[in-house]
Image (cartoon, rainbow, N blue to C red; front, side, top):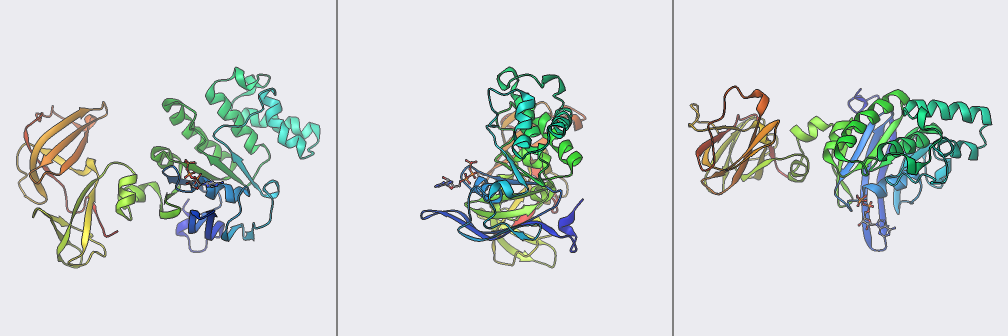
Length: 369
Ligand code: ATP
């Protein structure tokens, strides 16, 4: 499933040069974005980056100041929220406290004038979908947080919208339940064959659930890519820093061949990189490498490529992995981490030991932005 790589795939949701201003504050800035049918799409960004505003414009609760939003080729301008084949699930769930679970789910269907027998059938179907058959007669206050979340979900898909918008859908759940529910949401999306657009500030959540992620900052999209691309090939320093942990070596391209580049840091440390992309000789760049791609050893590596000397400064045992902070001779602190399951012997390194960090020339990316 990768319609974004298929030149023949038809765009489903299109934001075309969309700007949204509140007074003289620009919340969304000339943003263009395409989402495909049945995609699980995540808008990821820090608080205030404009992701909810984008969702609210798609739902019809806000109007763009300029630009267009199309759904299945149709311009949504002037179409009120209730006439859009789009439904939104809020973080607060907005359940009716005095109504039972089944009445909450039935509410929108009845309002639409659906015949009673059909409403009953649909509600039963929805209760089954979210595994709440036994809770039909309870009221929201008699449910756990996770169960309330599922009622809200059932209610928001009961009308069979084509697109479900989810604003921080799991924000109210504790960590463990949130992780479980992420997988449930993915299953549900598959089962229903809907397009999901989820807003979150939680990168793990976006990485887990989404087919593609748009990383936003200050009303702009910084990169749109699959979770693996975002992590392995971030387009900029901002994205590399925003998603996961990263080591960033700032320097200048001292030498360039067709594929490789030699980067010299401010203190003279040299890094050899393969797949240097577009970085030109003389350019200011950053070499970004993830902590798990860095090897740490007490002896200097034999080949001496990209080997930097330092001192072990912190060690944190996290169960599944161990994290090392190594302070290099030039003062930069490097984060290296190794999976504990992969360890074949106890690592002899400890605090204040001399250590070498090293990495392969193809283990990171060169960033020019
Ligand atoms: P959060 O995760 O905190 O919800 P967000 O990325 O979803 O953040 P938005 O809710 O889209 O951010 O808001 C983006 C910016 O626009 C914020 O600075 C916010 O204060 C501003 N904003 C949103 N709605 C309005 C409004 N109705 N009037 C004025 N400013 C607004």
